[in-house]
Image (tube, rainbow, N blue to C red; front, side, top):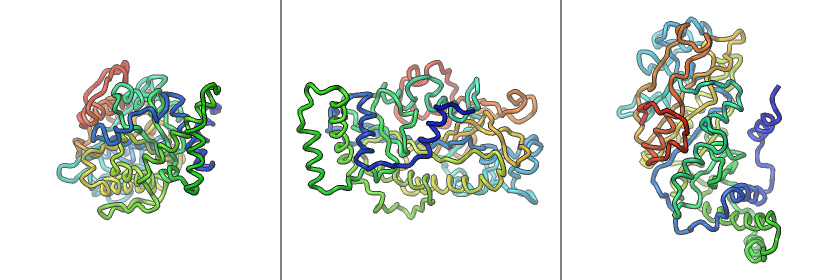
Length: 425
């Protein structure tokens, strides 16, 4: 039985925006200000990136089956464990035929656009397989939390990094999630923000209404008010500051560059809005987006195909749209766990342990599957059932922060973690 907290989180993920946009933005601003003080107090001269680098975190929620996305077709145990649902190596006479990555791995055929980037000369798209953590947890929401707080109760790993790299000249918004609620990775004392869509930052009232509302929030004396009332007035001021900051963003009229075609759906729309915002050069360093629906307990062959295709098309369109700007952007995928290597009786796979992370863009050492591959031999499986998490996901994130983002304090961001270089960057 799921806990009330799990139910609440599920509802947050499923819910769309259901309030008037002004009220939604007021609540958004209140959440950030309540943690770290008014946005208006930040130095407005600092608009523009303090670093030209950007990281986009794409969370595959549900527990993606990476053993079908990046299948170890060269491991002789793979076909034994997945006799009906497994990917078959190139040249096989039947089945779902994978796209060759190397002698051991084949990519799901629905990911042809990502595969083309993986195999391109001087590729900057790579895979880190068998990632995870110990001791493992196979609860969806508990493991999602562990990934997003990097096994450290309290603040999220992105928020801790923002804290240790903060300066008086920080841009007003360094972290932005495009989803209905703030992800745990961005939760903490540093101000981070979330919107369901960038269109929610558009003021839809009449100009005279805005003048009236701003007059109320900015000219009303707040001295002597209860703290919560003062916070409400300040949130209104910050609401308009955010609207002004993102005034040049308009997803309704945005035309992707270089012929990029985003797939229909939430993921394509979110990455298109991220690309537009990155190109506006507003100082946002971290973005978080979700791709929901990766829980395939049954009928995996049919159900994973559209998910893999959407993921591949969205990532390809994103970097095509960015063009040369993509050299300053790294996108990393993560999921709360992988799936059990052995197929179940419903043609699907159950919650596992080891998974995989795709890392693309910037100076990524692409064209390879990185990390230690433990194999699928019976003696190599954790508890005789699960792909071993031979590569700690925090090592991948640390390389992104240190090599791509210009440095961090690993003792604060990943306390207790003993780093093993992966070489993805």
